[in-house]
Length: 242
Image (cartoon, rainbow, N blue to C red; front, side, top):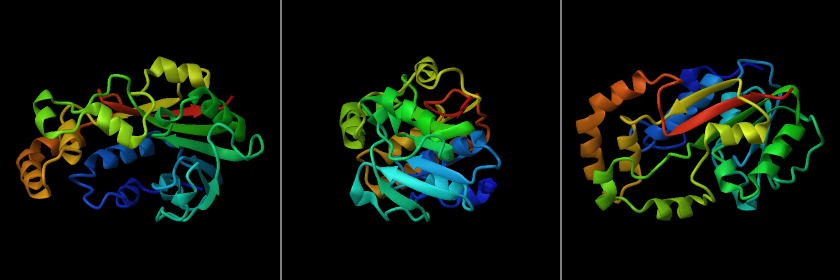
């Protein structure tokens, strides 16, 4: 089962304004695509993917099971998956059941993150993949101080998103997953961070749109030339189970 071509994958960005308010999510999708295995994944578990359905978009021919603790998210994703209500810390699946497990923007929401990581390692087969994305521990909002007057506080935003921690240093994740990742790719760099700040600001859409237009050339260059090793505020990682 091969992963989707990058263009078709990005075209399914669930944000309706995917090149403005949703550019940050497009950046995340590209980073995940960059580190995701090319093929060989027949059965995939998406943990905490009740709204996004990214795993099914990434591997459209694979059997994808989405597990989320919120039963109200069943059927909300546009992607075709089987939904199971469950807890990332106590997954209702036998050991070695999946070729890959995804934890995309999930660990920062789980108080007992070590349990979630251990469960992901348990249910993936030997040689299988674990895909993780998370904010870096140095993440901040808004990125630019001059935006503070038109943005909610970082604490307000993190509470709305349900974060229990800011993010992770690479070393923290290596401790959770037992060693260095096989691959990583950053996203949301200092240039594109301005679009992210605008997206979550209190500014009305018409004013946001004007600011998007004015800064689009520079942001476009920041997006196009972003490489996996470019400094970013968030990172996607790939681990392979021994």
